[in-house]
Amino acid sequence: MRINIIGGGPAGLYFAILMKKADPKRQITIYERNGPDDTFGWGVVFSGKTLANLRAADEESHAAITNQFEAWDNVDIVHRDDKISIHGNSFSGIARLQLLKILQHRAEQLGVEVVFRTEIADVETLRSQCDLLVAADGVNSGVRSRYAEQLQPSLDVRAHRYIWYGTNQLFHGLTLTFRENEDGVFAAHSYKFNKTTSTFIVECDPETSRRANLEAKSDEETRRYIAKVFERDLAGHPLLSNNSKWINFVLVKNANWFFENLILLGDALHTAHFSIGSGTKLAMEDAIALAECFQTTSDVTKVLSKFTEVRRPVIEDYQAAAFESMVWFENAAKYASLAPIELAFSAMMRSGRVSYEDLKKRAPEFIERYEAATGFHR
Ligand SMILES: Cc1cc2nc3c(=O)[nH]c(=O)nc-3n(C[C@H](O)[C@H](O)[C@H](O)COP(=O)(O)OP(=O)(O)OC[C@H]3O[C@@H](n4cnc5c(N)ncnc54)[C@H](O)[C@@H]3O)c2cc1C
Image (cartoon, rainbow, N blue to C red):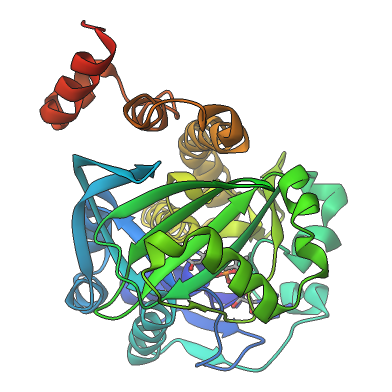
């Protein structure tokens, strides 16, 4: 079986690893436009459950990944200088570059051909040369546009603005920080992903962005402005840019996930707002699900239908929870008028997937504080 993959991100690399491991006779080539050390972004996050899935799928790469991890079990919510810790949320972080290096190494060790610095423009030729073409080419997927008529994508560009930074200030837990200045309300999502660095994502609504004149600011001016907004949280550490730019979150869905021998995977197929977890997790779990469908048959049409059947409800459910979470952050300015404990409670319940009883079991001291402050009991 011959498999061509466009995109050497987590989705493409992990799918190649699992397919080659299951059957070394498969000929698998990944085409990646970047070099092996080029990347964007900072740290990626996995939950305890995702890690268990990664271990079951490939122990070798799981061991290498967890070896590099920074782990925590708390969500910290900071509002008006009050930091509220909610325990019982097991997560780990790793640098995106580190993760890609581990997956690249594992893929090459298994005999996958990874062709770097090669941008695929002629998708149709590549598709005609293989049994299966995997489009793992990311959120701005060119393949998805090329086959838009067949795949029928929908792209919902949200009005909120966000930017990915790094910082050497260490946030020991998934930290959600709300700060307000004369321009409006800013929310930061931060977490450490190695011994020296944290991811620091900042978002704000379009009115705040306009009042702060963010579009007109240079990279350095923007970092100085945002560092001032979060000066009490960054403790003097600057924000680190990695070609960081203000972007709008794009909610990607596709009516059809495949066309003949072509399948979309990872961000090309779907996105979920970063406030509920990482797209990396979904990309790698897509790869696991698709590889599993090849365990019973190599009939590509049957496999792609089966993959769509088993994976679509999982993704739809996740996207629905992520949508609630995204809308909550889009309304952060409204919640900023709440007292810290009320805002923290609202933030923890935002996806609609955590029940009061769950939270009480996982974080009893948090619920005790909430009940004492609000008089609410259940
Ligand atoms: C600016 C930005 C920063 C981010 N930072 C983080 C972060 O710090 N932490 C986090 O958890 N998530 C981050 N994300 C989200 C995360 O990257 C994705 O959710 C996740 O990587 C999805 O994996 P993927 O394999 O589907 O796509 P990607 O990781 O995007 O991989 C797609 C790959 O395809 C390649 N490609 C695209 N077109 C072609 C072509 N025609 N020919 C050859 N190669 C091609 C690209 O170069 C890329 O390497 C970030 C996203 C963006 C946009």
